[in-house]
Amino acid sequence: MLIDFEPGDYVKNPDNEGWGLGQVQSIIGNKVTVNFENCGKRVINIENVILEKVENEQI
Image 1 (tube, rainbow, N blue to C red):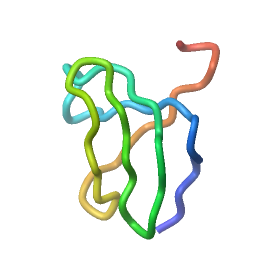
Image 2 (cartoon, one colour; image 1 turned 180 degrees about the vertical axis):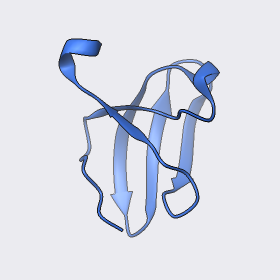
Image 3 (cartoon, rainbow, N blue to C red; image 1 turned 90 degrees about the vertical axis):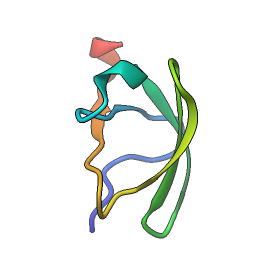
């Protein structure tokens, strides 16, 4: 699986819009740790969840 973001980038989880904007904290293998504004830190398995990168213009 190709990951098109890196720590510090902003992402959203389209399946859980209520989580709000998240900032990638770390990427280890297929696990991405993201700190979301409305639900805190979550470890996401990117084989099961597709995160969408949010460009700076959208923040």
